[in-house]
Amino acid sequence: MNQELIIVLDFGGQYNQLIARRVRECNVYAEVKPYTMSLDEIKKMNPSGIIFTGGPNSVYDETSPHYQKEIFELGVPILGICYGSQLMAYTLGGKVETAPVSEYGKTDVTIDVSGKLFDGVSKNTTVWMSHTDYIAKVPEGFKISAHSSVCPVAAMECEEKKLYATQFHPEVLHTEEGKTMISNFVYKVCGCKGTWTMDSFVESKIKEIKEKVGDGKVLLALSGGVDSSVAAVLMSKAVGKNLTCVFVDQGLLRKDEGDQVEAIFGPKGNYELNFIRVNAQERFYAKLAGVTEPEKKRKIIGEEFIRVFEEEAKKIGKVDFLVQGTIYPDVIESGLGKSAVIKSHHNVGGLPDYVDFKEIIEPLRMLFKDEVRKAGLELGLPEYLVYRQPFPGPGLGVRIVGEVTAEKVRIVQEADAIYREEIEKAGLSRNIGQYFAALSNLRSVGVMGDFRTYDYAVVLRAVNTSDFMTAECTNIPFEVLQICMNRIINEVKGVNRVMYDLTSKPPGTIELE
Ligand code: XMP
Image: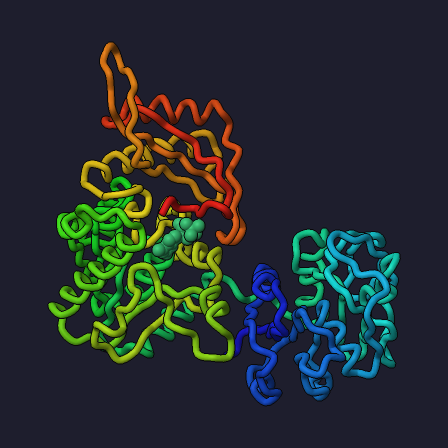
């Protein structure tokens, strides 16, 4: 690899992905690697710099992760963060102790040495601390470059050896000038030029795939979501008609979504590939008839998908490569150091057992979600698709509480389309983590005109979340909710009540099932 690279050496910190993202935001490629990676492997990768992450351990514990001292003699710039800073101090002969006062959260520090790392950073600045140990004495040759009221070494450096360390976390946005510090490390300390951009990624990926696939046949399960769509375009640019995309419309997609996917990828679309749309709505509805238990519904949808996909794959004949839309967070979360577990992706879970192929290709494996989006725009995909809301694999199946029927699918599709339109109109769409309409299984009495109604209640949901593990209900202006309620009841047959779901996660989940 001849591109600039920063290795983020993982010592078990919780912000490791964030460090890599911040570096990439400087247009320099970064990869998270386990601390068990050997020095030879590191040398082979020829990094421009290395960042040691934080971690939960104390350097003086017997079982805590360490790295051999020789890494500091490579001449490669190193930035140690939190545990990484303590490890640097300890390994090079400094002293690390339990701090008399731990620091957690926003902390004011004073910059004592405005060297390369803190160039342009204010003398007094706010940073994010989270530590119980601290550096009590810096190693020989190091200078203290920042301190707080209770932490004598908030940062240290040895400019000559290009070694820098911060007790705080510059990668976290609460560190107000953290971006400047990371950019200083990457550009001023490591001397990077910033050549990692999405157009360069796309170009080199297409070339790499072309070489790998040659005349081989490639199969991709297209869900219409961001990841599989970007993967499809990338593959089509690389192998053209040797790519076949199978798109299964299970009748549980958002309003008009099936046609939108076909318009982009089908014969009238912009890309050269074989596009197969399977209209399997009836088949899925038949399987789901009478089933109300959420896990059972999920299972049926997943299994039926595999069956449909398998039938289509058999018609195509032998394929050489199967494409998966795995992205970098999946790779990191599934365990660094081990080869990544194949993502049990919502729509292709279990596929490798069913389809005969030589190898899996994961073209987006090294990209974060926001980078996948940028690549999608680079490849000419429309914005509405690239910025599409997250959508669960079982689709509207988990947004219809209880039994799924064609009629209920129509109701939730129409209500959801209205809701999305109004949120968009109110200019709120980019500030909400996820929002959608769902259908409760509550039917209640209402009155419309002079007539009694006995219809369904639609549930509107909107949450803000940073990682989808926890979420808070979004404070949507009441007027916007009222417009949605009016339109949904007036325009969607079968609905006479609209509710707004206030529940956080936990105790709720984002989806209703
Ligand atoms: P929950 O409902 O568990 O959802 O709070 C968290 C996030 O995951 C999405 N989700 C899924 N995504 N396959 C997926 O690919 C699934 O089966 C699935 N279930 C939930 C959900 O939309 C939310 O973004």
